[in-house]
Length: 302
Ligand SMILES: C[S@@+](CC[C@H](N)C(=O)[O-])C[C@H]1O[C@@H](n2cnc3c(N)ncnc32)[C@H](O)[C@@H]1O
Image (tube, rainbow, N blue to C red):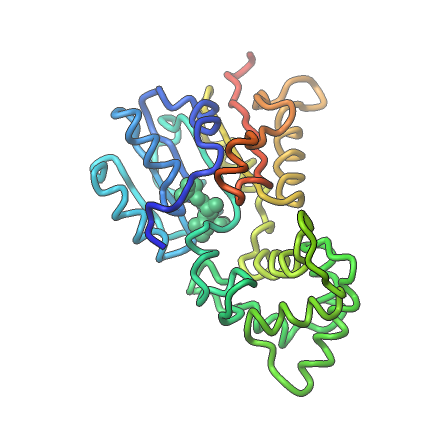
């Protein structure tokens, strides 16, 4: 796939909540193929962009895409959890965007192992510097830990059964390919394809991807710390793609919006999460599970 095939999710809604008209720095903590970032730079010549991504290949592609704006762009191959430590003028930051999960570029590259529809190695690392792969988890984690992973991060009903199956199969052979794992899931879950039903392997792959990339670890803390660093009127937009992430975002924003003494450090701009329109969901099926939440940092004492 070429970079240009990437469609940013909830684009207009994101730009509106970020209020990108203002001069200053916009941070994209999950740059991907720079779909959102490019629009910010294109629409506001006074915007500067700081972009981070765990995935070196995505950063390299984003750099190409953003070349026309290079004098206003700073990119980091880094986990967005280091955001509060990056040396930038936080008082000039106007917006922070986190568009979580994986990009279609990652999903559509079979050798990364993110998707179960094509044959590939069970890798799933966003960052090549990470030693933990999905295959290693299936090989090394004790059965109860696998069951817990599939239950908590995949919300899979047959979590214990699948863990038992994996523990039994791995005694005689390594589970190293996406299609092998999918076949095991289909067997355990007695999968019969039905329109509108999510393939159970999607849940299992989600659970493994979250574990490999430690996606939920420290996420709420990062949001809290980043919001603590920025100045008043900075906008925060988070797009999540599964209920576990969305729950963390919701609880963190709610906690920051009030203290036991009264209003907190942010105002929430989305009482309910914003979801894609029917037209967007039809145009870009991958957007269907997206939920956007936004907030704005309060002025002190207001
Ligand atoms: C949904 S995509 C972002 C797409 C982007 N907004 C666009 O329109 O092109 C998510 C990206 O975030 C990256 N990512 C996920 N977790 C990350 C983390 N903790 N730190 C930095 N990047 C992360 C992934 O590698 C992926 O490229």
